[in-house]
Length: 517
Image 1: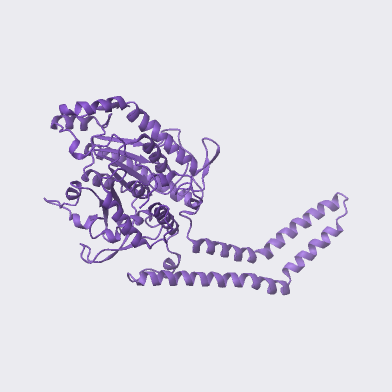
Image 2: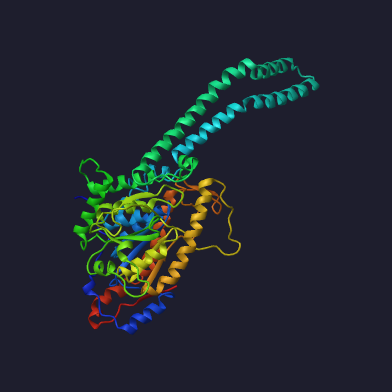
């Protein structure tokens, strides 16, 4: 099957068996210094962790481009939220379709992602129309009063104004006459209200029928009618179409349904694990019904057996409820679960995923979505997958200090995005600080400044530069940050040392390539 992209792997790729034996005391010393000293080794199992919501995916794409051009070895791609998109494509050697001129983040469809639900937008327009028509008589009185005052000023200034005064009087008389009000007011307001009622009734019917297939509806009528405010369907369709475009290559084949596409994806990745450009995959989502995080993974051996093994001891967690192997029975619903990473809690409708009847969930249908503060759980699962060093990518800049505040957003989606970004930023800092000892090295790539919120797909105004900044600029910023923050100081500056490590590996020493902050 044609994929149409080159490998993200390079000559720096090593297998697990090629890694030198590391003395215990050496590994411990590396872990103790990893928070202050950057240590990179191509021999270590490396994970690319993508975290973020909405527009953060464009930044991920730019960073992936920088890593791709530098030939950085990646063994595992992991993601939460919009990071699942980059992880899924990079796992099958398709990262180029993220930043290409006709790729996912360069197309015009991104402008329509995570908009207000269509029923809410149309409802707002219809209510605005009805309210405007109802206020027309009052507006006519106000305009007439202003016009009469203007005519009075003209009369005082000795300017002929009889014609103006007469015209104003005629307009007011027509607008407020019983015949006119009873004629044009119902003709405009009544159809708008009837259309609004029909729209809401249709929306209720769709929600009710969809819910009846899985569970009873609970809650009031208005909550059912209005539902979640933001639409995630456009984001799911955008990703599914982009993935199918990559997988089909140049073939003219009809696009399958989502479940079939997901099964094909799983088969493609399973059959090619270990080949250049194909990587282990790990995605985390949150189960609203199970009240726990779920980790969907497709891993190569021996990491697969260790990852899905059960835990022992007091307070042990049943891994079969939380860790699902895409190469096994959960594969038929795994892609649906990955799409659930694009659903936002409370803001969008959650994704309904039906588990296999033979699974630990006994064929139940659960509501899955992203958890903005679930990055800590993602890093835990990455460590369990045998990862030794992490390249962590986030579109959120470091928190500001004193005198670094900006004015708050006044638009609805902008204010929601501010809240999500604040929650994610705090969760990322806490997760990295507490999980760094799990790895020999953690490399962060994030922008120093990013004015775009999670839902600013059409760009937004930047106070610092006093201009409109676009999504394309965020992608380019990711590319520059990937080069400046990782490729040049870590890979470029250490290239000679990495090459020499290939000859020193026979001595059993751990390659220790350091870059002081």
